[in-house]
Image (cartoon, rainbow, N blue to C red; front, top):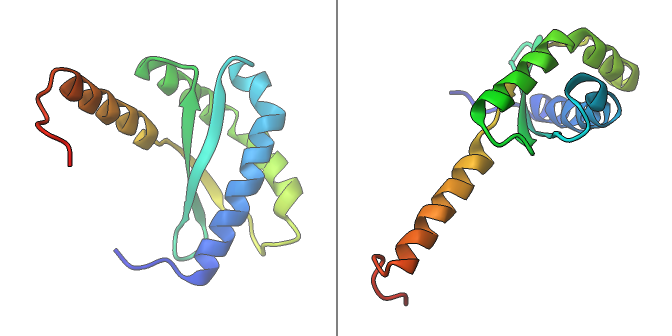
Length: 129
């Protein structure tokens, strides 16, 4: 996989920051006020035509609840995109198509920590250095 260019990284970061603010403003209307959604990263295609937005979802304990939030975000993408356009239109030539994906990295990290805690509690890790 080719390395992202400086421009891809810049536009990705611009979208990440501004899309996060759009989620803060519009998110409660889409998925409710109990659920917290954060933008973890944005990957731009080389032609800057597509922005792949990765989000983490908190206060939704089950994967099915997280998938439901992703579905709601995708259904309301026009609303989110218009908020993003309002914020970044002066900084980009054209607005990319937005794709939203669930980032499960933090969930996997918590699961691994729980496994290690269980192994430590049952003394199956051996002696720590």
